[in-house]
Image (cartoon, rainbow, N blue to C red):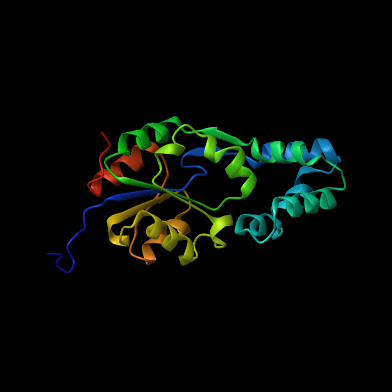
Length: 209
C-alpha cells in the first residue's frame, strides 16, 4: 500500500536531449549563415534566435519548408534547402558519458526522451544517435505542439511511458524545465555534469548496471 509521503520507487527515467545527451553550439550555424549572407553574427542571431521564428518551428507551428523560406528571407540569401538543413543540424557533439548511462539504465527502467526540438534536428540527428533505439517513449515538441515547461509536453511523455509522475524522474540542463516537470509530480533533476547526475540519481535509488 502506498502511504502518504512515502517515496515511490522510480521506474521511468526521462532525458532531455540538448546539453544532456548531446551538447550543441548554435554558433556553428550562425557562422554558416554569415558565410552565406555576409551579415554579422549578432544580426543573424537576433533575426533567427531573437525572434519567435525558432520557437515557432520547435512548436510545430510552421513546417520545415516554411522555416527554410523564412530564413532565406531574413538573411537575404537564397540558400538551397538541403544545404541550409545540413548547416542548421550539424551543431551537435555526443556526450559519451550520457550514452553509457542510458545503456546502463536500459532494461532496468523505462526510458523516455523529451525534447524541445524541430523536424530537421530530429530527422537529421536525434533519431540517428546510437542510443535512440533504447528509448521506450519519445516526446518531441514539434509533434506535441507544446514546449517545455508547458504541462502538455510532460503529460505526453507520461502517457507514452504508462507511468505515474511520482515514479518518473526528468533530467534537463535548464532548471526551469526540470521545475516544470516537478510541478506535475515528476522528480526533476537539473543536469550540471555527469558526476552530479549520477549522485542525484543514486539519491533517488536509480542506479545503472
